[in-house]
Image (cartoon, rainbow, N blue to C red):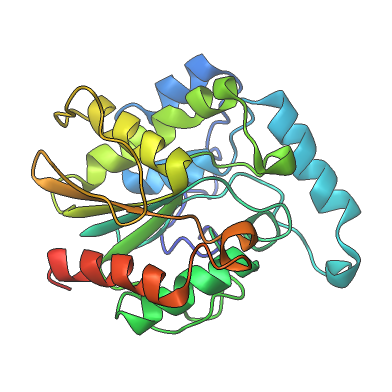
Amino acid sequence: MILPGSGHPADPVGPGVPPPVSARSAAGVSRLAARATLEQVDARVSVCRACPRLVAWREQVAHERRASYAEEEYWGRPVPGFGDPAARVLVMGLAPAAHGANRTGRVFTGDRSGDWLFASMHRVGLASQPTSRHAGDGLELVGTRVVAAVRCAPPANQPTPVERDTCAPWVEREVRLLLPTLRVVVCLGGFGWEAALRALAGAGAVVPRPRPRFGHGVEVALDGLTLLGCFHPSQQNTFTGRLTEPMTDAVLGRAAELASL
C-alpha cells in the first residue's frame, strides 16, 4: 500500500497483517506518534480520527464535492507529508485545502496556493516540475519535504487551538526524524512559524526565549538550523501583491542555498 503522493509505503498490509491503527483522541495521537518511523507516521496520519469537527468537515466536503470536481474521487482523509525522507529543507504550511489536498491526497496539490508554491520551488531547483496536479503526476522534490501543521482540512481554513495541539505530535515526530539531515525550515505564514517552533522545541532543539517573531524574509539561526519566514501563498496574499513571485523565489532560493541544494 502506497499513500497517495507520499512516496512512502503505509504500515505493512496483507494476509494476517492489520491496517494502521486509527488515533481517536489526543492521547491516541501522542501514543501512535511516539517512536513511529517516518513511514508509520505517514500511514497513521492518514487514518487519524482524533478531531471530530475536522473528520466531519473533511468527509462532508469529500461527499458533496465541488461541481468542477464532481466526477473525481476525493481523498477525504488527513494528508501526510510529501517529499524526501532525508530532507535538508522542510516547508511548513498550515492545513490542507478542502478541494486541494483533501481532494488529491497530497499536500499543497490541486489548489492555487500549491500552484504558486511548487512553481517557485521548481524555479529555484527544489522541485522536478513546476506543477502539482495529482498524486501520480511524477513530481519529485529535491532534498525537500513539505508538510502541513494540521493534517485535516478545517472549515474556513481555521483549525482551533485544540485541533492544532491534538495534531502537533504528528509533525513533532516527523521533525524529530528529519533532524539528522535537516538544515532549513521554511515557515509559510505565522501559523507555520509557530508550529515549526513548537515542533522543534518538542523534538529537542534549543529554541530561544522570547521566541523569534515571524516576518517575511526573517532569518533565524536556531540550534544548527535556519528558520526562514515566508508569507503564505494564499490567494489573499498573492492576488493582492502582498506576496510576489520574486519574494517567494528569494526565500526558497535562500533555503536551497543554505541547504547546499
